[in-house]
Image (cartoon, rainbow, N blue to C red; front, side, top):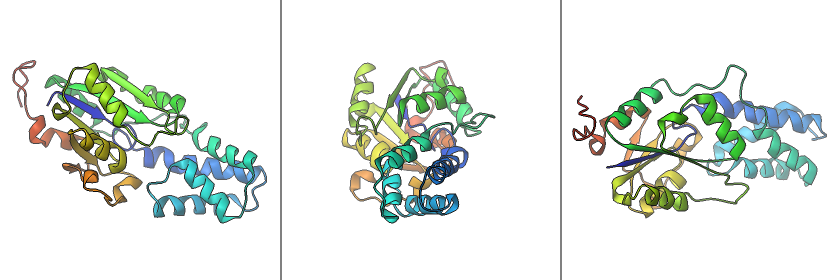
Length: 241
């Protein structure tokens, strides 16, 4: 194994705990203040229920279903709800990676692995998250796919791009992330090893395809250090456990 490709949200930090509720509440508040015909708390409840019941939905699709639930089709309000979910949601105190994220990235680099980060979402927000978390220097490659702007529902192209960039065969690459329909499925299509991080709403996703079944499942990112394919590589940096 030569290359490890990380997802960002709910993989390297607790997006669910630090941002998701804030984002849904902010969207609910903006809608309530701009003419949506019910109170903020009811909008928030509807958004969270739809999200829990349909973990494969994007925030854009969740927003659309809230409007459908109330029989509304106001393009101005729909756009307000979509934008509010992403804007001004990072708390003043900043974001924190999981306690074991930095130690794990450090140990993997010491073992000689190439580390890459491929994340999907609105480009400006994803870049702000990465900078705020203070993790960019750990990666030799960072790519942000604006999946809503570009209508991206796959990481396959990005995986091909990063493996080609480092001249690494897919069989020598590993993808770790929380979404079985992106981080796992698209990596396995190419013959990569896969690890699912069980955190956030995507941990409830049920595989709909054999390709969505990961090779490994972990509850903490430091679980990567116990995977046999990522064992000590003594030909790099003389690192020993």
